[in-house]
Image (cartoon, rainbow, N blue to C red; front, top):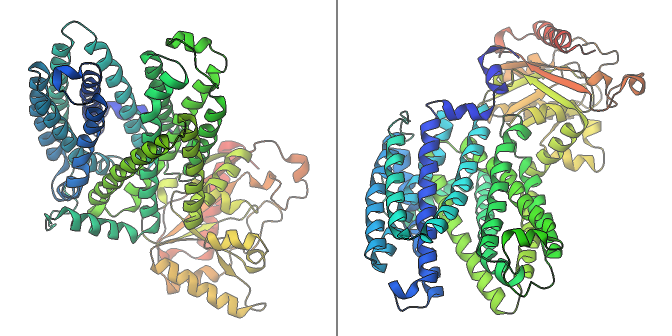
Length: 636
């Protein structure tokens, strides 16, 4: 792989942490998430164990009220936050937000030291307001700062940082509150961290406004409804919003049960609660980081069904792994590890987090890439509202279920089963998710795929992809290599094979035939190709018209000339190598030369202007791409 883009694809995502376009932003959001969790968990601990110092009200009531106060700003102000993030330059917005955070922490420190419950809850509300306005900027700035091949890695780092901050904030809050003068230590820490966060934000590069001429709508309900209506215009984006909100429903259901699950079911003390949270958080962080490697540096929505399967399988297994009765006395974390079956519980919780990372990171990246930049922040803000609503619903369902006599393990089992039902429903509505998953699994299970020049495929707009035809798996390999959906032109008799026809129709493949055997099919295919290109889609053709019979590249047929005469779009030459040795080819000796996990490659050349893209010139380019790749990789 050559050139700056190729070099970028081979680099590790962690290099972004040392680059100014990402590093200061990452540090800013990490410190903010850490501060949120230090304060929230310190407040919850103080209310739970020292309620009399702050109020005569029931501690359980105060704990639930605290959760509601923090979520309330997301419901009230997310619409306004999204408009501000789209209308103004984003680095300036972040600096204003971080400066306000310093003031919020002064209020929080005063509430802790006095002590004053009204000040503590006021600071909590303001902290929720701070997070409400930071969220849309947080996810909308990434596509402006990162390239398409870096976006999945950047999102993985952000999600990893968020869950590490949750874990660290929870642990440190618990440690500090238990110290002599712990309240003073917490007050000093949150103030210092807020100042550090502001200083880090000063180094964030400018990110121009996406919609500077936006007319501000002060009615949050009307604006939220407008943003949801806009998101619904793209079905995949809207269902991705619902998918993200479902993850927060799932996560809220699990995290809220950890204290009582530890105490009443596992017989553990507060250290076991911390262990459960650590397992879940570390799992999400690991899954988020692994997304870049598993996706091949692109937005791979095939990981979403993979993640949802794990979320259900290991939630259900957790139910069966949970012991029938707890120890009589509360046990610590080390004693818990010594209990029969404890390791199965530990592994299940870690894997739930891991598959949660596989699930959530591609969905955020998908919204960032498929939502128009002018509306990106507002759509993310609408998503924050949905997240908050789903979390409230999760809390309501948990209360009703537990009040009706359901046990905590049964509630977690119900969550896993509901997740499976929701996944089936969403993937039935948008087959693209499931098809990408099947494609991703097949290609990465059978082949060792290497790609070169993928960045030559445009991120938006129409293009005609032209490739040699080595095997029946060619379309799967190309689909697995490109983050954008592709309309493939395929022979109509294969398109109409029973059972497979459903898959091809879901892929929106375009059936084609020869002029003599089915002229009406041919004309309809040309019409479909023209309509797809006019709509800004990618269309891929195999101009040889058939699978290679000798491993070479046959002359290209003139049909592509007719396509370009009607739709003069950029032409992207591509070459496949290595598939001639696979069992999906017409190679008579394939059973002799086929190997397990064969190395295959897709090489993409620079775009050509339609005027110069003749069958002869394209044949020569594709031949040279394939030949150069075979020499580089020693493939036949």
